[in-house]
Structure formats: C-alpha cells, structure tokens
Image (cartoon, rainbow, N blue to C red; front, side, top):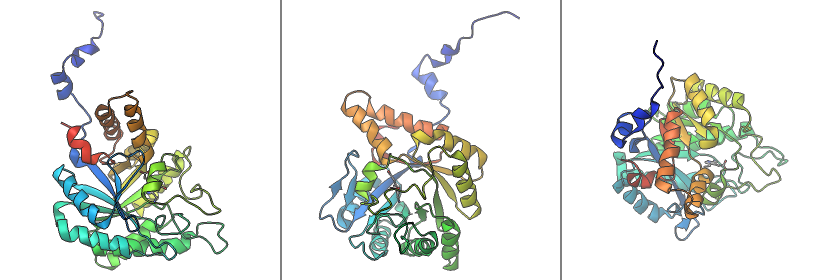
Length: 323
Ligand code: PBG
C-alpha cells in the first residue's frame, strides 16, 4: 500500500468548509438565562463580575424580561431574594412567578430555582439543627417540596432544586403529582459540586453561608468525587427528575461527558456558573481574549460534552455571538 502523508489540514482550509463540518453547534434555543429578583434592593443591583446582570426589583424584572424576549431569549431560570429571612417564606418568589406568567404567558419558558439559601438568615441551603451544628436533611425536604409546589401552582413550567439534600426529588415529584401538576418539569441540580466558582452569585442571591458551619461541604459534592456525582445523578433520575444538571461547567466537562454517556435517556443541563463566566470577562478586560469568541468556545465545549441546555448569564447577548 502506498504510503502518503495524511492531509488533515485539507478540511480546515476555508470558513465554508469549517462551517459545513461543525459537529457540535450551539443554538439560541439551547440557552437559559438566569434572572434575580430582590425585595429589599430599591433599584437594580449590578452583580460584580457579571456585566449586564442585575438583581432586579419586581418592576425592573418585567422590563428586563421584555428586552430579553426581544433579544430572542425564550427560556429563563428565576431566583427570588425576599427581604424577610428570619422565617422561611415563599410568597415573594411565588408572586413574581404569577406576575411574569400573567404578563408573558407561554411566550417564555420559566424555570424556578428551589432552595432555601436566599430565604434563611444563615444562608445555608437547608434548615439547621437545633444545635446549629448541621444542616438537617429531614427537616429541609418538606420545605423544599412546599416551595416547589407553590412555585408550580403560581405557573412555573419547571422547578429546579439546587440544595443537594437527599430525597428531595422524590418528595417534590410526589407533591406536584398529588396536586395534579404532573406536567410540571423537574430539573435536578444533581451533580452540584462544592466549588469556589460561585462567588458573584452569592452577591446576586445574598446567599453566602454565615453560621458556624462556614461552607456547603457537607451537602455539595467534593470536586474529586466523580462516583458521588454518578450516584446522585442515577438516584435523581430514578426519583423522577426529567432533566439532570452538572454544575459548574468548564472545570467539570469530564463529569458532564461521563454522566451524559452513562445516563443517555435523560437530557443534561450544564450551569456555566458566575465565577467561570466572570473569569472570561476579566480576561477580556485585560485585552487578553476576544469575549464573544471565547463565550462561544465555552458553550461549544458544553454541547460537545453532552449538554442540551446551557444555563448562562450570557444568553441575553447570544444574538451578538451566535450566527
Ligand atoms: C445555591 C445555588 C448556587 C448557585 C445556584 N444556586 C450557589 C451556591 O451553592 O452558593 C450558583 C450559581 C452561580 O454561581 O452562578 N442554591
């Protein structure tokens, strides 16, 4: 057989060819835009590191959604940040959901984050034991199910628990089905790691833990433990999650790839979290990268690794980035 040098560069020589041959394409339909709405901030509060992202007021939230819809965003993930933190209440977020749905109806797809970290005075994702020495799983799950039910009744299309308690998917599915809400989706933050990349978010959601338990290491997954992520994802799928999530994104692409390959019957979402999103912005501010292309490269890596849904603070700018 004649030996000839493989010419692999032949297929890379023009933009037309490269365009035709793309294997992983990001579409605006894949992107989900997070929204924050607060009760105590008198005006929209800019989030450090996330230019163009605010903790909105109830009024500015509606105009933000309006401009997002004009920019082609269809799918959102809402975080409510109520003023009162001494008792755990769901009314503020529930009222925002009703208002959004009343105004925009099925023009948008509304997912709502379900967690207690913006509702408790200590900022943990669940309630603390009487001694304050641990987050009490058993006491937290019924509250999460109640929150999910109230949000779904207010019109959320999808509820997304991000707390990492055991058994919450089963409890939420049962609560929804028991109330006749069997069409409400359940997106589980199933592989949520104990990450240092959540910094800017904790300003947006006012959710930094401030009790004698300093961090979320006893409920979020250790960054080194793929096996824990696999166990959580499998368990959540069995308990009735419709969509599974990996979070953060770029530092956990291997996890996304392996989980989406091992559990091909359930669609995967990935959360490009605040710190990893802001990191690219800081590089661009130093003129070290071109931001739109870098954003697209990150999103492409998520699709290549198996994500269908990309939760990103940049969804509202995607019309400037995607062809
Ligand atoms: C907690 C929650 C977090 C994020 C979404 N929901 C972070 C945390 O564990 O403090 C992070 C999102 C981001 O960083 O963009 N309920």
